Amino acid sequence: MSQNIQSAESLVNSEAEEPKIVSNLRSVKNKVMVMSGKGGVGKSTVSANLATALARRGKKVGLLDSDIHGPSIPTMFGIADQRPTVGEKGIVPVNVAENLKVMSIGLLLDNPDSPVIWRGPAKMKAIKQFLEEVDWGVLDYLIIDLPPGTGDEPLSIVQLLGKVDGAVVVTTPQDVALTSVRKSLKFTETLEVPIIGLVENMSGVICPHCNEEIQIFSGESVEKAAKDFNTPLLATLPIEPHVSSSGDKGDVYVNDEKSVWKEKFDSIVNSVEEKFN
Image 1 (cartoon, rainbow, N blue to C red):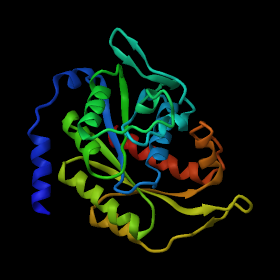
Image 2: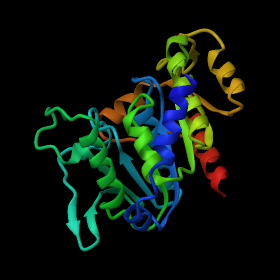
Image 3: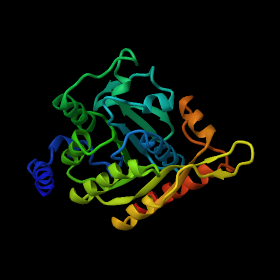
Image 4: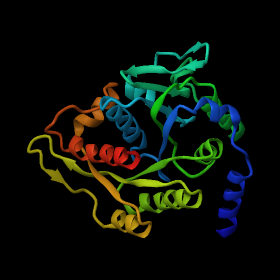
């Protein structure tokens, strides 16, 4: 295990900062990764809603979907049929709302059903292009939505950026998910990426009839992971049917002030803002 950690550290530290990337992202104040060691826990939901909420609070936000094989951000924003353009300063990301721009490999596919059948080097080249050739402009936040795991994509993001300002780690309550997510927490610790906090998604179900929260998983594994890694638990997000359906329809953020999910998600947004204020 120690050899694996050392090899990861040497890979990151062996590369000097990419001058083009540094120059291109000079006007980006804060770079935040959203990650998890496990797939299907809702990383993209957290990424999309975090970016949207920050933009609605008046922050200038970019959202980079770095999931090369399973890009879902275009679908969540209802922009799968839109394409980036090319301007004087590089590739122009798609504006999805006031203060919010998005870039994803999904915006470059001729057919949304087409798989991206690439090995590691091709994926790394694409991620590098997203960082150094996309005209992100002046941003308060660049939110980077990562695929599951601690391999090529997250390691390359840290390697290419040189400095990531924070990470939000997403999990679900089951022990089988926490086993992988704890590896993500160790990843951030090993590569010296500050952890903003842990998000427990799908912690219960909000009944659409009585609005009560029903617990469907048991245990205290998430709380234990937060304690073991000395990181705050930012929120426990329940399943609300209209939250998932709105994302499928391309309407990301929930405006309903009576929404339990929205109330809890707002605490994540507050924590991110407090981290960088």
